[in-house]
Amino acid sequence: MTKSAEIETIAADWLRRREEPEWSSADQVALDQWLKLSTAHQAAYWRLEHGWRIADRIGALGPEISRPFSLAASLQTRWKRSRTAAVAAVVFALVAGSALWFHQRSDGVVATASFVTPVGGRGSIPLADGSRIELNTDTRLHTSVSKSERKVWLDRGEAYFDVAHRADEPFVVYAGTQTITVLGTKFSVRRDGDMVQVAVLEGRVRIDKDEGIERPRPAIVSRGDIALSRGEATLVTAHALGRVEDGLAWRDGRLVFDRMTIADAAAEFNRYSRIHIVIVDPVVADIRIGGSFQASNVDAFVRLLEDAYGLDVRREDSSIIISAG
Image (tube, rainbow, N blue to C red; front, side, top):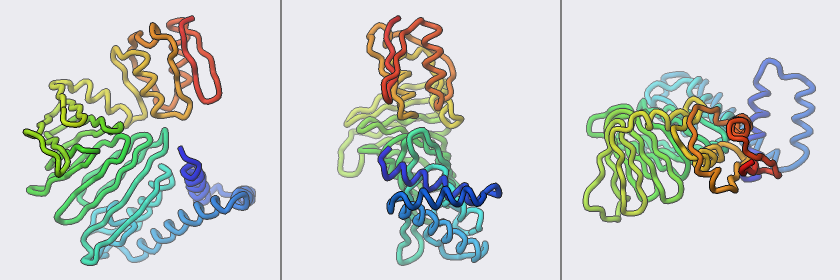
């Protein structure tokens, strides 16, 4: 996480705590001291506080707002505005450490928003069309929702989509050079650089190359299938519903491994923590393991490896070095 993102997350936590009934004068003194430490602290805190005040003004307008207002436009049902949904937009920023930006076109029909989760964070976004997106660790995406289009750009990370069906109105996800198109389904997209993985829990999706890039024909991915795309190539593993479900365990804060190498398991844990596991012994790296683990508890995972396999564990700064005992 960058320094600015870390400050933003701390500022969000201060603002969240300030709204709780337990907030005390001692807490206020501590907040004032934190703000005095840096102008960057002040800027981050006041920016989020300003967003919170906007949400309050949205709520004051009541549920009958006919035009979308920028802050909440993409986070609630467009025709049923409410203070709760407006505040939810800001709460997502507080909990997930999100950066938010919004735009309203002159005809008042397009609302766009951007969301960022920190390492180890998660977030859930209700969209104006009734769809829902869940963001995994270290993920950034932005959305554009209107009566005629539903588009999402996944810049990095992983997201789960529960898409509301609308006839003749596809829901499109852009991930690198890949375009994933659906009418209504449940699926996840994970992007690591130019590698894009799509796993379908329900329904079907179509994977094309981005506009301007030729491909002989699109790949159709159905329930229980996993597609892995890089460049011009797409490999589809069919009838792997168990793997799809295991891969979505992050939605409950878990990681599920089934005969996965320790090296690959460590790489998964490293996505959720700034403390990274480093496997220095190739024999250890190839050991296969299985089980269900809390994604946020890297220490418990390492202790299990140490106890079960007698591995040597050494901690250095922000790394955990593992080798044969």
